[in-house]
Amino acid sequence: MHEDRYNDFSYTVSSTRDEWPERRPDQGDRRTQGQQSRDRRPREDRPRHARAQQRPPQRRQPQQRPAQQRPMQQRQPQGRPPQGRPPRGRRGNDPEPRSVGRIVLVALLAIIALIAVGAIVWVVTHADINPVESNTYDWSRLEQSYGRYRYVAEDGTASKLGIDVSHHNEDIDWAAVASDGIEFAYVRVGWRGYTDGTVQEDSYARANIEGARANGLDVGLYFFSQAITLDEAREEADFICDFADEYGIDKAYPLAFDMEENNIRNERIADLSIEEMTDIAIAFCDRVRERGYEPMIYGNDRWLDGYFNLERISKAAYLWLADYRGEPTEYYAFKMWQYASDGTVAGVEGGCDMDLLFPN
Image 1 (spheres, rainbow, N blue to C red):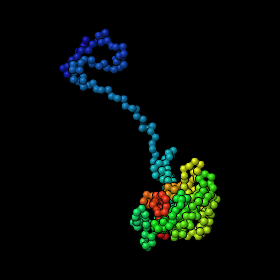
Image 2 (cartoon, rainbow, N blue to C red; image 1 turned 90 degrees about the horizontal axis):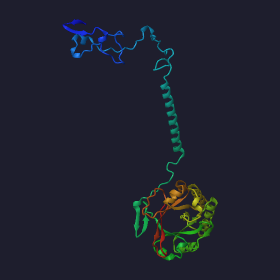
Image 3 (tube, rainbow, N blue to C red; image 1 turned 30 degrees about the vertical axis):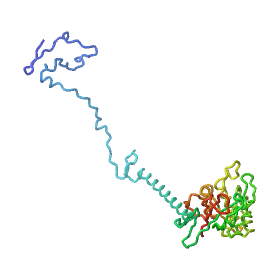
């Protein structure tokens, strides 16, 4: 045993190996590793200077690369990219890749803008900006009294009140009709079968024409069509024009084309497309015009602006609108308005179709 003194503090260290404390198997012999043995006394029993000398182990710093082994960055002349590197930034005379992308994008946008401008110019110069003529009626001038309408234009000219009839109305007392304020009558002269397609004359056509004219009423004619080809449409037009020629029909009353669906089995027109129906109607109108008369196409709004191409038929003929809802709300122009199907007219049994012919 020996004794060391440090600043009046002393401690005893075992001097023989046999007196050392036993170590666990996983503990190495620090003395054999060249390290100084730690003081195993409790911390409060150690001298102050011993505690001060014990410092936490320092972390091993990463090995620094010797300065002489680092390649020195040589300053390159202005305007040249470094050897072995792609150009970056805006150095040198080579354009930046991002700038090339911007140039390509601007060029594409310019091309698209030129195409758009060209399309607009073509539409303005070749297309009709207002393809469907709008009606100019001032509905504040529409008067109604006892289920009958009257329209007076700004120049003072008034509409005409009329009816349209067929064999469904059977015998008509035309003298009574005339005395009830009716001014004209549209008479169905013929029809084509829904399924067999044969053209037939309305059995009351001649009696109605002659009776209306004998009592001072103006007369117009219409044909009920089920044509499915252009030739059939021309056949129907010739049929109605022959009647007009025979009876000297006033050309102020257009000859009307009336195509309607009946929702029956094997109906001829059921499979026609909009354009096919439109072509058939226009073929009828063209033949009527060739024969020296003005054509007119009948239908409600669902037919005129749904089953037909409204833009095309509005340019080919006058329109005869059927609308029973009161004051019309359709935007397009029409010459005649069927405003009721259940009107009451003296001399006609049951309900009657009522019409208003607008002044020119």
